[in-house]
Image (cartoon, rainbow, N blue to C red):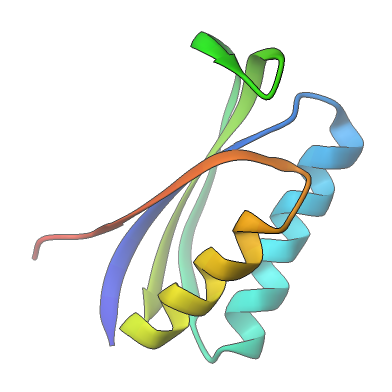
Length: 93
C-alpha cells in the first residue's frame, strides 16, 4: 500500500460537502483503503470559475491505498456531482 494525498474541492452548500465527504469515506472502505487524515480547509475563493462556481469547499485527506483503488476512486469522483475538482498525489516518504 502507498500513501496518497487527496485534495477535494466540493460545492459550497453543506449538503454537497457532506455527500462528497461521505462518498470518499465509503469508497475508501469499499476498496480496502484507510483514511489516515481528514482535514476541513474551509470555503475559499477559486482562481477561476469551475462549473459556474466562484467558491469551493476544500478538504484534504491522506489515504493508504493501492494504485488500482486510486484509479477506481477517480472514476467514481468524475461521475459525482458534489466534486468540482480533486487531485491525488503520491506522498513522498
